[in-house]
Image (cartoon, rainbow, N blue to C red; front, side, top):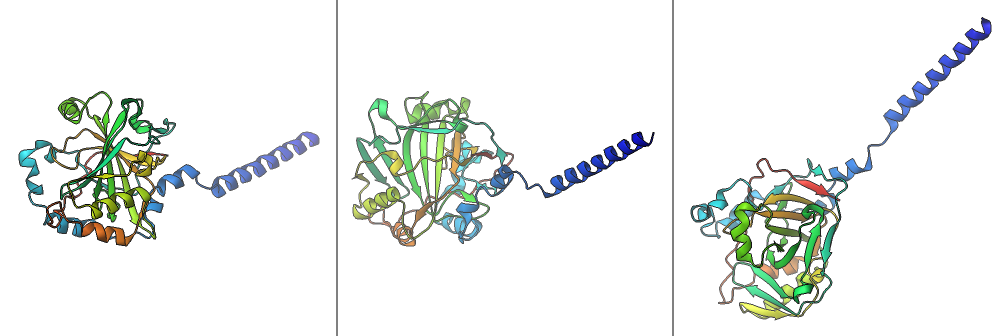
Length: 311
């Protein structure tokens, strides 16, 4: 009996030690890395970003942008509930686990021709490639659907914002689903296809240098004040390097007809631009020698849309 009692006491003591160890582990264990990463997803891009909240700068710009508030009267989609751009939250993302990586096919193929279009509202880059060498994006948030590059637009200051902060510059890369042969065909199909387009957003933050592709575009439009100007040919990755981490949401074109059929991907890390480059862009004249007519759309309500995080 004494031996049995002794064994029971030893067993009870071991259980007590194991219980204390378990409690200690539970208390001292660090939060999973994935949670910290999601919580600080846009920490890098917002670091040292002192641009004022969007409300005042964007409203001031819109006073110069005639007719924007009337867009909805001519284009009903402009009054929709899934409009772009939006102010992205800094937390509350829905994390996409186990997603396929985002693929940038032919982004390393040099274009046959690159043209910069300056109509006084936006500066837009167009390119020409052989049919089988056109830049294509697929995978990730786009799943197996393939999107072919259409154009790259420069916008300053940024239309998309993060946590109420506006950035000095933004580029929007529009891609059209490979299911369609033209922009018009995609627009016609958009009412029944919520993802006829894919847009990629690059946000630029002040730095001591300017991203090489952006610098070349700005240098060209400042040097040649014409509606269309040719630029040196490069692969598309020269202007927008591929990336792995991004947030995505369902939205619209940011100009009329404001079609609500765009899957927007917002790069998690900013690209660099100097203050001098931004100031030169603000001084850019239209092809007729007149000051640019700003074409920055004010931020639209996110409403009940979800923002997904891919990393």
